[in-house]
Amino acid sequence: MAQLPLLDSGSPITQSIEAVKSLLAYVGRACDPLPTFLELPDKRCILVLSNKKDAYYTVTPEGCSCPSATYRPGKPCKHQRKYFKEATTAGRSQIRPMTMAETLEEHDRNLPKLPKSYQRMVKAAREEALDDPESIKPAGKWAGGFNGPVIPDSIIAESTRASLVREMLI
Image 1 (cartoon, rainbow, N blue to C red):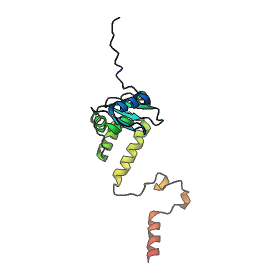
Image 2: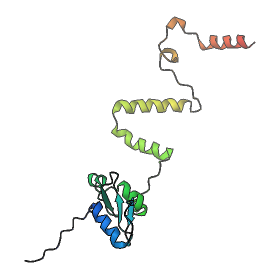
Image 3: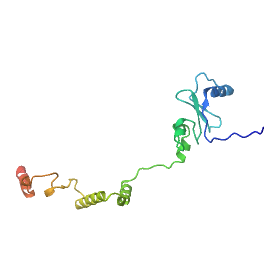
């Protein structure tokens, strides 16, 4: 019978507790308290005890045999991030926060893709901000420039209001 080579699955295989105990006995280490992790001599493979303490996950820089790595292929699991920090961060570009200017430029680029009603609102807000850029007072949108609905008879003219303030100060 011809001997066929085993197929390489490409992913690490979870090891049983008995297999790790026999490995520990072979290298001459005690296995009475099970170690939480076992680093192999080449330091490219680490065996990590599962939370249920029923198996050891095989962790390498390229993969892990834990369920998280199985359900999220291509993304590093917590074991890879913990034991192989340099390998997980090397392939990822560093994310930096955008400056306010970059945020505004991106908003301007995306504005034509947004609904027309939103574009009109942004245009009105920009025009209003250009009128008095130093003011932090909200500009009124209702009759007479007041904020909110008003009764026309109760509107006091600006000049009258200013004179009332002057009388109060004197």
